[in-house]
Image (cartoon, rainbow, N blue to C red; front, side, top):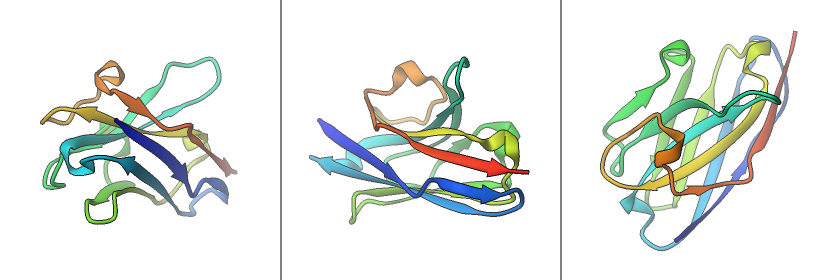
Length: 124
């Protein structure tokens, strides 16, 4: 089992940047595929990006490629989401997720563990 805690959210102006962090505790962090999702009120959770266990394969939502970057540090049990050129439509609660498996995926149902989320608000 793994516990996930996100941090780094906040209020930023359009065009700015934020880096989200997700700290994992528990066993064998390197055995989990990690992902980031986001959600706004009244909408389904939206896939952002996924990274495989050793960090050499990533899968981004097409609409976010080029602005968002995921990275992981297995030695520190951390995964990061660097968000650049933020837009008001990026405003959401961002969730870190972990799945037992080998491959990246955009399917939220494939993830076994979730953090509590961190709010990102982008002002225009």
